[in-house]
Amino acid sequence: MAIWQVVLIVLFALAISIPVSALVAINYRKKVVEAKIGNADEKAREIIDEALKTAEAKKRESLLEVKEESIRTKNELDKEIKERRAEAQRYERRVQQKEENIDKKADAIEKKEASLAQREESLAKQREEISKLNEQRLQELERISGLTSEQAKDYLLKIVEDEVKHETAVMIKEMESRAKEEADKKAKEYVVTAIQKCAADHVSETTISVVQLPNDEMKGRIIGREGRNIRTLETMTGVDLIIDDTPEAVILSGFDPIRREVARIALEKLIVDGRIHPARIEEMVEKAQKEVEVMIKEEGEAATLEVGVHGIHPELVRLLGKMKFRTSYGQNALKHSIEVAQLAGLLAAEMGLDVRMAKRAGLLHDIGKAVDHEMEGSHIQLGVDLCRKYKESPTVINAVESHHGDVEAQTLIACLVQAADTISAARPGARRETLETYTTRLKQLEDITNNFKGVDKSFAIQAGREIRVMVVPEQINDSDMVLLARDISKQIEAELEYPGQIKVNVIRESRVIDYAK
Image (cartoon, rainbow, N blue to C red; front, side, top):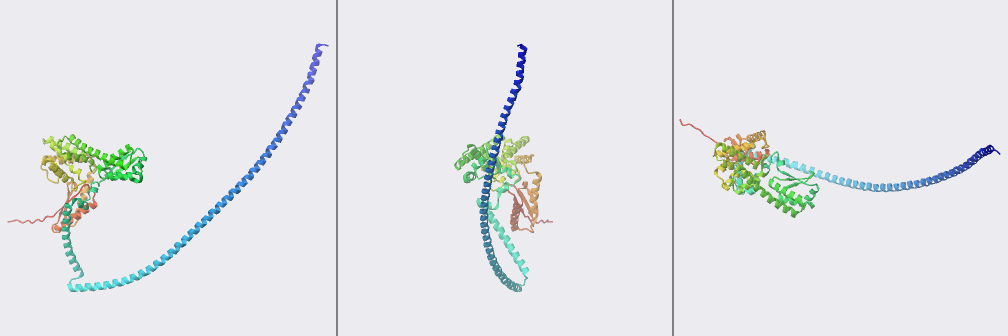
């Protein structure tokens, strides 16, 4: 056989076998796919049936839960309704009781009103009888005395008024003399100087100190358990502690600046130390008092060194140091005294006078302000007494006594101190009180005095520290002068605010002039 024939046979066999094998493969694949699809349908039906069963079970569970919740809610509502009904019944019983009580009270009030009406009727009858008897008595008295009731009344009132004026004047003089003898006991009844000395527009600035705190928790520690710490601190220092909403700060309030400084130092030491209890507070207050005393002494010595004045008594030096804590119209008293001393020294050098004596007088001219809040009297008189006590020279004493014009200046140095005092006080920014405020106060003082009956003229002098009142001699006698001075001083205390005290000087003068020809 030829090769091409063999090739043809092979090709023919291949052509027949390939389609047959393809058909067989396709049929097999078709059977496999149909089998898989059938299994999938069955699984899908099983899943759907299972899901339906699960949903049905969950539906039944939800219905049961809803029923239980509704039953529980109903029970709670029933319970609440029963409680409210019981409470309403209690309120209703209370209201009924109150109504019954009100009815009883109303009945009692009606009975009282009826009895009061009867009493008023009886009183009205008695008043009528009394008025008739009084008229009869007055007619009989007028017939016996030969005077009308008005004439008799005026006569009696005049007699009583004259007697009372004289007795009142004598009584006032006796009481004032007794008060001077017992100054420590009776001074508080006549002169309240503490408030007056601090009665200024800037009182809040000169009567408080602020202590900064590290945190607000420290406020509770300062107060202490049941307020023991703050009470101890206030008792020991005599200063009020104000603890409010101000963040990280405590306010110390008090009229005495030295006590306030002691309290400030003690509180700052306690805050730094951290141990705050009554025993520790007492210890720190004692240390602070010693520190302040040392500070006062050092400030006084520093002032004398700054001015160049030596040989001053140690007690006067200490009083100078106390003036660091004293203000007048916002001006620091110690700085003011140093300024006056330096100005007086400059003026004395220009005029060829004793510079050291001028500085000494200028430094000590307001020394009375260191004790005027502790003792009664003006700072001038107190300063004179202190200078005499510690053996200062007559030149210094006269300068202190005359720097406000209370007495006449006897030396040029006294005049220089007066001028230096005026310059220091008038320096722009030195004092808070303006010229307008000052003149208004003087005018108010004179207006108050001029409104009194019998006053001819009045003059406010010595920077408003004294009011001189000239009275009409024909209208005001010697007894009336005492009462007039008292009335004027009371009126000034009631209507004006001023530092220190105001002297009321009432003058009555009668002159008779004739000419020999």
